[in-house]
Image (cartoon, rainbow, N blue to C red):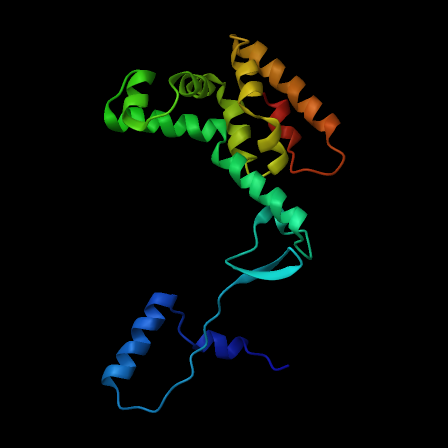
Length: 197
């Protein structure tokens, strides 16, 4: 195969919308011969129900190590996305932003504006009481499906209920050790973050 790097470097890069707008402009106003356009759209394939499906976009990070994405791996990825959507720290920070934007001071007022169960939202908001190093660890590792699965709301509240920061950090270290013991494969874990707690 030839080397197309020099050709690609000389060709201007357009978004799909810009390309379509340019093509319609040429068709409407230019008296030129048809041109050939090269559009590169990233995609990956998923094998689901014995059928190959094309998904536009870049391959998700948690599936980057898998050569062929089978149905079981795809379902695990979808479960991870659902968990990530309900990740307690993200939801708590979202509710805190809504409180600030709408000038709200209580959880019941959040429920009036956004709907939902006030007791669940109150529990989610307690996650903001975690010490900053723990919140930083959770933010840095939320792309790891195992971390998202392990540190669900109940475990995070268990840390919050320790009251004192040193007790919270000690409980967090114990949970990290429990997490490490439960894992059989290598994970994206940085011991320096835990030892600094």
